[in-house]
Amino acid sequence: MNRLRFCFLLPARIWFVVLFFAPLAIICAYSLLTRGVYGGVELPWTWESYQRMIDPLYGVILLRSVVLSAAATGICIVLAFPLALFISRATRRKNLYLQLVMLPFWTSFLVRTYAWMFLLRDTGLVNTALIGMGFLRQPLPLLYNDAAVLLGLVYAFLPFMVLPLYATLERMDPALLEAAADLGARPRAAFFRVIVPLARPGIWAGIALVFIPCLGAYLTPDLLGGGKSVMIGNLVQNQFTNARDWPFGAAASLTLMLLTLAALGIFYRRGPKDLL
Amino acid sequence: MKRGLAIYAAAAYAFLHLPLATLVVFSFNASRFTLWEGFSLHWYQTLFSDAEMADAAWNSVIIAVVSTVISTVAGTLTAYGLWKRGSRLLSGSLYLSLVTPEIVTGISLLAFFQWVFRWLGWHLGLFTVILAHVSFSIAYVAIVVAARLRTFDPALEEAAMDLGATEWRAFWRVTLPALTPGIVAAALLALTISFDDYVITSLVAGVDSTTLPMVIYALARRGANPSINAISALIVVIFGALILISERLREA
Image (cartoon, rainbow over all chains, first blue to last red; front, side):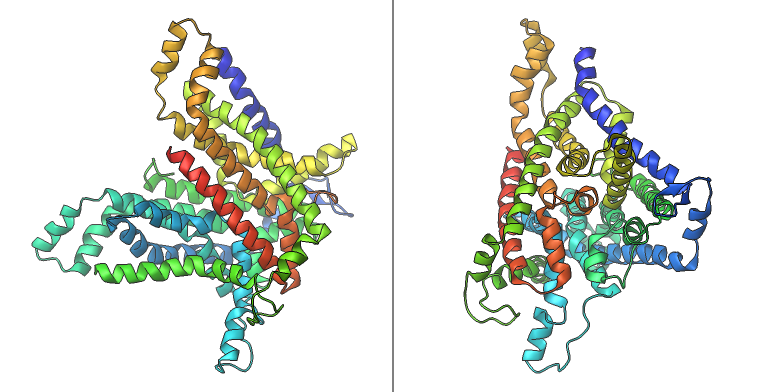
């Protein structure tokens, strides 16, 4: 009994030790070493890379990552709530409505991000259409700024907010709303004092599912921010490739990892256990 | 109230689907600019005669298929082993690998490969991409199969063993067939994730192992090119079909 289980779990155990924990351990070690003359790392051990993370130059990047992620999460809550409410109240075709939410999510992340480049760039559809209709002479700079990154993040992770919200709203007893109405609550009061509190576990799960991937976003700021709206993920990549400062890149990726785990710790406790 | 919600939902669905829909529509545009000049399959012809694109697509298929086979086997065995008796350490590791940002996974694997290969004299290539893809797919497979196992009655296995089947035989003849829809769904999921991955792949790929997402990324950075619309349209259709099949199987 136990021997079969041991054999079955062995591949995953070996895999995690060799290709997950060992690489992370190397990154931990690199983050504490000194930058080599030709890239790479050298002795002596030092905390310098972590001290540089707090430097205002990089502090801005940390701050932007957290603020953009928080803003994207907030916008997702506002956009997703009515949609989840609509799906949970639908009398027919609930599954179809849900699949329509998930379908763009499952089509290539890269393609979805490129779709916004196609729409927003100077020669993109939006600018071409506006110029063609005579509203504009010069194209608007819609791409390569914080707003474009924010839009890309909201678009990418909106389905992650709809699903847990739907799951909690679906379980809600409609009689509660009738009771609120019978007791004289207007629709607005019923919404904020009955529906929202009951959906709270779903909201927390959605926050976790949107905020955490936003924090580690790389492609969205890279393609839609175009180097002008840099997040931690881009900092990590840049230090390892162009800047060739591995210790600092390693320190940045561990900072990102710690932020992710901290966010997970905070949100996981408040969300429903069966949704995550 | 109800009507308002329905109108809002229509707008929300438009927001979710219009960007991809316009991308697909303009892949059939005769012009290379974003002005509609009539229907044409020109960009699809360019696409299919592009040798670089074909090589990259072939690499992507090899990587996706091999990493899916490995991660489906390992992930299924993991889910089954954990179903028999849980292990906080291993399931914790599975979840940890799921929440780890891709860029961190990619960078740490890159550092690891370079460090190990310095002693062995090896180079980054297709197999490093496959190893990387397996490590992020195992967790997805294990979680999908575990969900299927939750609906499986352990008494069936016990009955098989009471009737004289060995533990392995009970697994092979009773449990595994019952899990098949879940396993196929998990494999399709792993296949699409692997085929789509750019961040980790671009870090651990060698010079001869460029994948389709890497080519699309390079084209997108270079600027307008309707070929990207055409390849995107193909990817949207293929992915959509695979995921719909996978969803059906998961519900079955």
